[in-house]
Structure formats: C-alpha cells, structure tokens
Length: 325
Image (cartoon, rainbow, N blue to C red; front, side, top):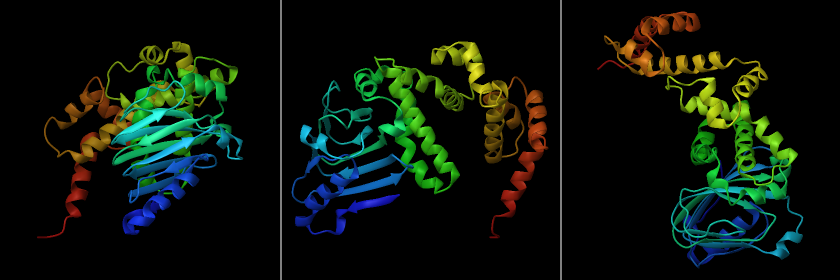
C-alpha cells in the first residue's frame, strides 16, 4: 500500500489544498474542492498496468468531471466504487442518486459526473483502463442502470470490500498478480452480465470468465452437499455441458476441484480443533462428505495421514511450541 496523503500533521490551512492535489492526480482528470481544514487519508495500491485500488477517508470533498476534462490526454478509464460509510452522493448518467452506502457505483470516467462527500466518509474503488478491461464504452454505459440486478453483484461487492485487507496481507509476488487479474476478470464479468448491449466483446468476456465465476462460487459454498454441476449451471445461467467445458479448458475436473477444496477446508478446521471424540465425523459432515470413512480415505490419499493422525500430530506440534510456565 502507498499512502498518497495523510493530512493529520498538516496545518489546518493546508489540508484542503493537499487533498485536492492528491485526488486530482489519483485518477482521471477532474475538478476537486474541499472545505477548509478537511482531513483526509488517501491510499493507493498498484494492481498492475492499467489497474489500481484507491481508498479514501475524508471529512468532505467534491469531485466533478465536465466536458472540458474530456479533451485531456488521460487514459480512458472506469471506476467501480464502494462507499463504506458516511454521506455519499453520485450524479452520473442513469445511476440512482442519493446515499448508497455499501452499494457498488460504476462510473464511466470518459463522461461527466459529480461526486459529493458531505461528511466523514470512507470510500474505495477499483480503477481500470478500458484497454485492460476489454469492453467498449457503450457496453459499460449500458450496464450502469442494471448493475445491481447482475447475478455477480453480491460476489463482486464482497470481493471489493475485502480487497484492501487481502492485498496488504499478501505483499508483492506472483500471487498478487494473479489476484489483480482475477479482480479485473470479475469486474469485467459483472459489467458484461449487466450490459444491455451484448456486443461480441461482451459475450467473449462472459464466456472467458466462466471458470473464475464458477470457482469463486464453489469456494463460497464448499460446505453445501448439493454442489453439483447442475446447481452451478443454474446459478450461472449456462448449460451443464458449459460447466464441464470450463473446467476441461483449464485442465481441471469439477469433482476433483470441489474435493480438493473440501479436504483443505476440513484439514484446516481439524488443525484448530482439539482431538476429541466425534470431532472428525462432525468435521466430515460439515464439509459435505457423506460419512467419516469416505472422508478418511480421501484425506489419507491426499495427505498421507489419516485425519486422526493429522490432528494428533498437529496438536503435539502446537503444544511443543508453547513456552514453559
């Protein structure tokens, strides 16, 4: 994370100018104003070429992009924002006006908008270049009114809400690049699924992110016993054949993907549980296994130990780390 600005230690008379300067350079060119003495903390995470995550906490500010700003040489971008707290108002195309705390706000930054923060508020947004997004301006604009109706809306909102904490915990490396790509794919799929104009690029975006959407859904529902290809197909409005094909295209098998996730989740749960009678059976049922014997067989095949042996060795290891008292 890079903290662009924290006005805590600035003199009161300098805070508003510093806030305006920081926000003016954080995204597409816009006019920014703020009340005198307005405090703020602005942080930005780099998510790769043409992608960034912005988090702001301010006492209040106004941002407006007018037609004169459209003549600038800024890259064409979109913003998918999530107001976290406070009083936030957005005036942009067909977007519903008023406070929408906790709701996604899609903004086409190539067109005019006005964004008002009237009290102490926290906001965050993923900002993507159109070149990275891979969708047309018309597609994005047509998606704005129907965004909340998308089957991907809640999933994307959770992802964006948790993203700053997750990025901070990961640090730099290949996994962060994968997370950035997954974030772009998810935003692209959300917009494509909500778009009224289904261009060839929109259809390609939806199809190209099916595997990502399926695996995110599986992770969220791994404990469900009815996590079948038929349910996945119904949840994502595709055929059962398309579900299997999405996994085959990645060299994966649906059943084994689900099984790996359940085994890993059960193993982590057993690591935290005391070695008590019945704990393995309860854990197996909680993670969707039909019985403890089936769970034990698959667990040994995956990890080379029985669930009981894993649990006991882990308990001994943890106990050995405790200092003498």
